[in-house]
Amino acid sequence: MLHAGQAPAPKAHALLLALALSPLLVHLPYSASIVLHAALAVYVGAWRSVKPEPPQESMSDGDAYRFPLVGSCVLFGLFLCFKFLPKSLVNALLAAYVVSLGAFVVVSTVLPFCEPLFPPALRDRVVALPTIPAIPFLGFPEPTVLEPTVPELVLAGPSIALGTWYFVTKSWLANNLLGLAFSLVGIEALSLGSTRTGAILLAGLFVYDVFWVFCTPVMVSVARNFEAPIKLLFPRISLGAIRKATAAAAKAAAAKAGAAAPASAASHFAMLGLGDIVIPGLFVALMLRHDVERRFASSYFPTAFWAYVGGVATTIVVMNVFKAAQPALLYIVPSVLGALAAHSALKGEFWALFRWKEAHVLAEEREAAEEEARAAKEAAKAGGKGGGGGSSSKKTK
Image 1 (cartoon, rainbow, N blue to C red):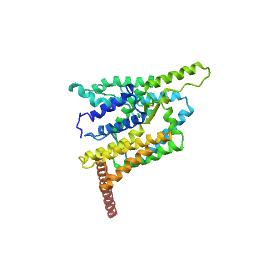
Image 2 (tube, one colour):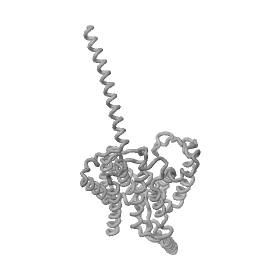
Image 3 (tube, rainbow, N blue to C red):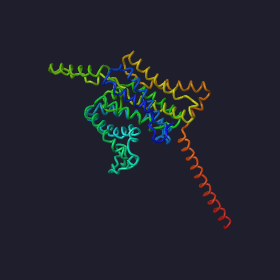
């Protein structure tokens, strides 16, 4: 278990960074690269979520039921925007918003490793910056107070530079570095709260993914048109071959008047949406925290993790066989939930695992129950006093 100030899974972080940079030196088959990136991102994010303090945000059953509906509205809204508005304008606005958030996310990603490098006197020193006014339509209903520590402020420079690099060049590498940062921090910061909530969320998004990929062109269209770090990109051929092919296509198109526009470099990249990493990753991380709470008397984390890896691998195999985009959650969700159900049933712990809740959720429920009991007691006391006064007045009459 991690203690305050301890960097989580440093070797896995280093391996993930090396994997992200590897296409610069050597070409990996994109199928293997997708599986390795997804597996390492989930593994690292899960260990980052193991902390002495509870996660920043926790999901309820109601949130899990609503999530696929809200996601569907957002997805279809993006589809309509790309259909009826200039693609360049939509992408510029969305990319600016995502990249702005990315600056904060990148700082959060590298802070555990860089903070110990600063003198103790500077680590907790806060720097007061101007307050950002409320921007309700962007999800900031109240003014945002910026009070970063010195390490956070120093790391903000490289983080902003990375976001600017992506915004200006749309580099696949900048895209992947930002996308991985979003994935790690997303898995780390959000808690599903309970196994039941996680199962509800995965089941709902299973239907969501299958419907929007197989029954409509919406998901694939948005994924291909949305130029922002919400997906990871994997070279299908070597970077040198991509540069040559793109240059040759541009030269051929320029030589022929009225020729079709050359194929963009994006056509040489396979993609994996961050949702296929973060959503199952939240559940895998939940199983790790379950095992940590039980001091590894149970081993549901390895089961969930390898089931996830198997689900991603199955997605890639089916995609290559049928030469068509596949909803990854169609294979990941049954793999993860099925493996955990079988494992827990064999150990006679199925219902215990299904009903398990994290300590901070149980504490919140106890506080809510105590508050409700206190309110009921006060209401009964007030009602008793009112009833007593009424009896007295009747006697007086």
